[in-house]
Image (cartoon, rainbow, N blue to C red; front, side, top):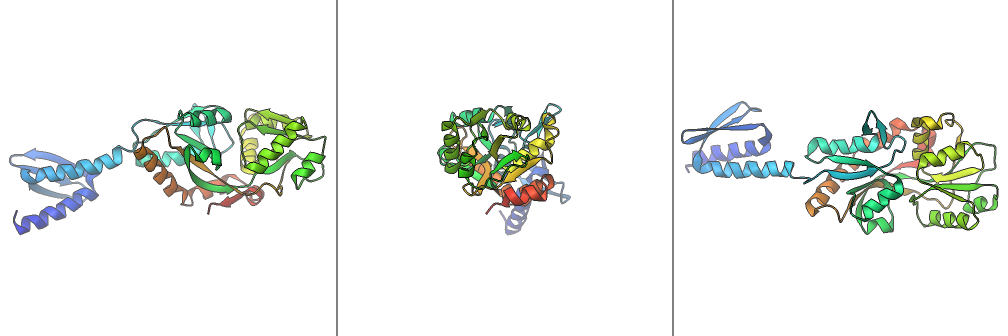
Amino acid sequence: MRSDEVGVFNRETRLLIVRFHQLTTVFETGMIKVKCSACKLISFVPYKHALILLLLWTSAISDVFANCSRPIQVPVAISGYIVMYRDHQFSGMIPDFLSLIEQKSNCRFTYIHVPKNRQEIMFERGEADLLIATVKTDRRQKIGDFIPFIKLRPTLISVESGQAPIHRFRDLLQRKELKLVVVRAYDYGPEYRSIVEAMHLQKRLIVETDSVSVARLMRGNPHYVTIMTPTLFYGMVQTEQRLEGMAGKVRYETVTELDWIESGIYVSKTSLKSSEQNFLKSQIERLATTDAIWKAYLQHYPADVVKVGMRRRD
């Protein structure tokens, strides 16, 4: 190849790599005609160089279109602004977030509506690829890689009835008239598990399959309280018709034993290929480090809920 051919060839090759998705090729006698619609440039490349171009183009295409070999399985439960279901379609903060990945890749997310405890079982068995809107725990770390979105603080939640405030778990244990209502499979750390066990031993624990059922029980009985993140409970009250009338009556109390925790998404270590794991982790992490999640929360939650239960991720 002559030196002038090398210069043209290298220049055109770089251009093809950068804008490969806008290229079209048309075979002509003894040459390949390469058209770059972005730069309005037409060049003719000898067949002996065409293979190199083809390999470069194929490699670039494979990077974009080989991210996910199948639909990514995502079990979900309806939970306020996080996950909603309207007009036969899932939406909300997490589906909207994952749709950003769909726009830039061939990955598609299939949502499966199941209770929270079923989500955990599916993830442990390798039947689910992502575990969303969840907190980091030692148990989950064994089967998935965690990408944090935000820091949340679980609080003691009650329907306002003029009762004395509760600042520590011992206050709750001493208030014999109160019962604790929790969602099966919710886990906010060892201190949370400890108070749940203590209330169970006192026969003052009620376990429900979902957060809406918890709130419905609380609406009808001022002596029922729960432990949940304020963002989840607030969003549920605002979006669930069955909880109409509770807005403005809910009290969120910080408890000394309940500290800030990371909330985000787990990517399965067992159900996905290594390449799929790495791609999804990199894309989720990339988006999580932007302001997209934080701004989405601020759009949905009032200042008092943000102040008591929400912080940016580290």
